[in-house]
Length: 239
Image (cartoon, rainbow, N blue to C red; front, side):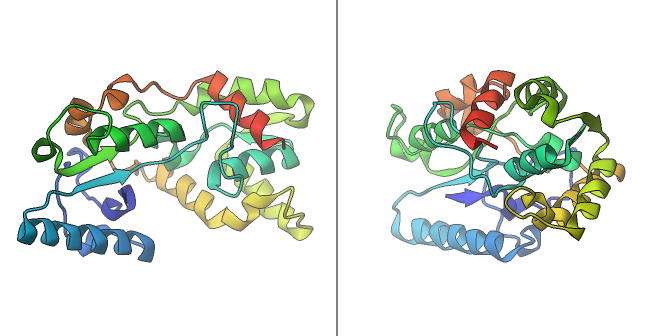
């Protein structure tokens, strides 16, 4: 299991990242991503030397569940944004560079992995070897989720503001931090980067999914995150 972070610095936005080995250390920006790249490079070499096939899946944003059980980790960037929005009474009208992230429910990601590893598909091992991308091919439309968030939280979210205004309010809220109610303050740099990147026209790294969609029925059937799914996550968080 790898990560799309291993190709985070892909610098050809008009060309999606191919579903192939990319042993270029300059593409991975963080230690975590570099460790994933190291692991996949070792697997590639081992497969070549031994003749034993390997499957490496670059995972995108794993979201909350489709079912009523479980929940999206409330410490991650989106749940933290929602929790702090309730605390501030303000909801951002965009997510900056995060707007393009292909969120996929955790069950869908798990099923893609089962598909491309041959557990739930009829493809031969020889056909399934190599690289796949497990993410939602249909990008999330944040603006379509704002109404359900406002409806769910009612008067606790008083206003929708620009991402920049939301970040400014979050910065001011650090004066008297209540970390349980306002966890997004810990991720301020992440949100600032998303806003600044959007201003510069930077978009999320595009990843090819053609091969993954051929071999995974789950990938072909994925739909964008719906208001109903977002409502389910809000109910699970219990903010």
